[in-house]
Image (cartoon, rainbow over all chains, first blue to last red; front, top):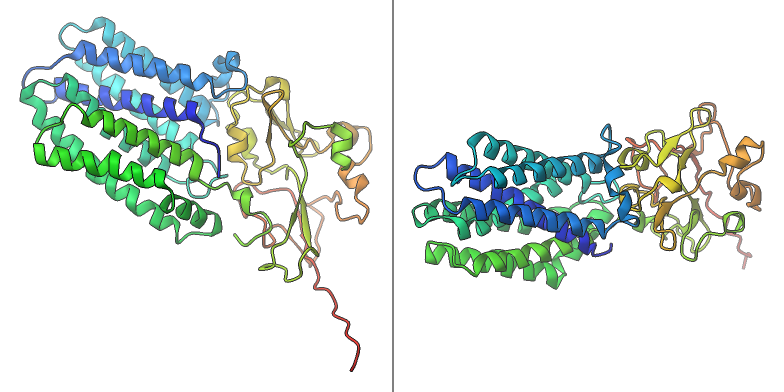
Length: 265
Length: 167
């Protein structure tokens, strides 16, 4: 098993929450009729989440002062592209926050959302290395997209007017259902892979952390949202705890290919 | 030991490791091993994923060199290499790996491990010309990554001869 990578857990979860928050804010403001909601505090939250995530990511580096050099290899390193994408996304979110007058300009809103999703794709590619057979595919991107959808919808509920709560509730409900299916099915698929991928699947289904994440982060919020037909104030906090547990599992339960050297792959 | 003597790595930082073949592959315990270090892949993932361009591949011999002073210790190469070649140096807080003793090569000498191996189990060969019937690039127990194309070839271990006295 690998290390917990707490700085990366915080960075990825917070930055993906910001992507989801901005994307849902753009949709709510400009693609749905009615009042925009508390846009400025919403974009302020997204900016603070991004800044907190970026600061956390520095603690992952052996030499944090060299962080600015991480964009030197855009030609082939997904990490360089991720650093650039996240930087541009942060700049757009701050520009949106500073220029917000009741609403953020439609072009800027959607530009920020699109750049955020592109940065999220870069992050997905960064964390799908050949060294981890179970993750050397599209799944990290899918996991990160689900985090953005679930946490973005969850936290957007704090800034959404009552008229538009049904829209946010529907987005969160669908995201939680898709997340539940994906997180239950993927470890089972890993069980049918080679030795290393199978071990990753076994690590997942035997981990209390994984099941705590399924129950607390997906099933309980889903049942609450379903029964109450709205997003209770405590649900986003529970969902955030679930996503953090899920991300710790992502970094710590995946098995590296070299762990089985000398055995059948 | 030869590698350790040459470079005096920090405790726990191992550039070349010896792995026993598990019984499911070779049915005799502690009789067959792989001595593995960096494979100096044709398409090295460590080089491709490094965000600060701390790796380069030498044109003349294909050796993949890590310039440790450029490394910021992000660990991306360590996660990416399926062969576990780059390791984290907790003292310097940077990655490091087998350099194939490129300074010795430039001086016309063999790498320390090749020179020090008492059974000649490690040899430098020109893969473009190396053509042995019993040699394979991906033996059992060694991860298969054609996209990386590791620059190694393995002579498969022969089964030991069982000698029994007639009753």
